Image 1 (cartoon, rainbow, N blue to C red):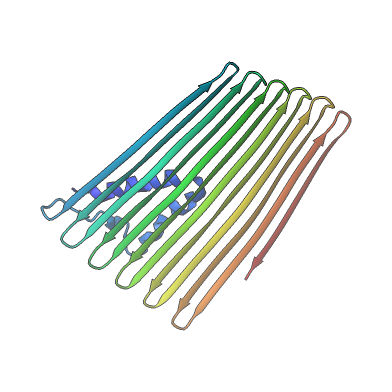
Image 2: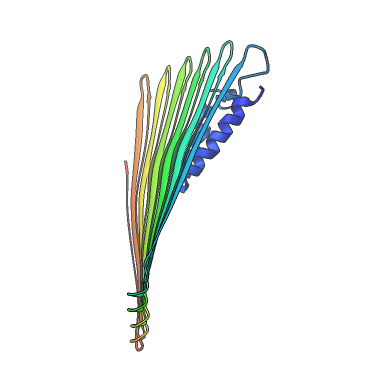
Length: 317
């Protein structure tokens, strides 16, 4: 049974990183903070092969799907639904220490397609979601460790083709969010780390062949925060950081009058704070930075224009 919990921990970490996505990559990379207490992460591998250890694993999985189709002389309507959910749990008990790991998640997908030959239109809508969580607890005589992660993600696309009006419209939305938390407690010191983040993206594209024009708009947002606390007999340290960034892009072109335009803008706000307290001394620092930038370009048959704008503001205290 050697390395049983290490394997479970690695498996849980991989599952959490897949669920949470890029929005919380920086949070996952801060697991090194758990090493504050003489390498407690290494000490998660606490079980050796002996008759005094007991391992119990429980796994469950359910899935379902549904397909419907309706037809008439000039139309076709199809709907597809699918869902999957499952959970895994493991418990290890030893003479002086115990550990528990559990993970659960579910996913679903839906598609609806409508073809109307009478009006020469095709409409397709697809939605997909996934969510899950991973938790682990280790308890020993002198120290304990708890870690948990959760996240969910979703994506939606809607495409409409109108042959009568020579237009194609496509809208895509995606979002992901998640959190990671860890607590380490020992005889003389304790540490807590918490991180969460979210990201979203939407794109809308319209192509009009009759007017020979194309319009595409994209908006994105990324936000997250990280907090860490370290306490010992003589001092306390607190770290806090958060960031929010938005990006907007608009592209337009018109073949009839031979013109095009492009605009890209971004805004970012970051806050960072650090404080340390000892018996007879207290120190703190805070940094705030805001950045915004805009690029615009326009072109016609006889002229062109390019403009840029950048604003930077910061505060240190």
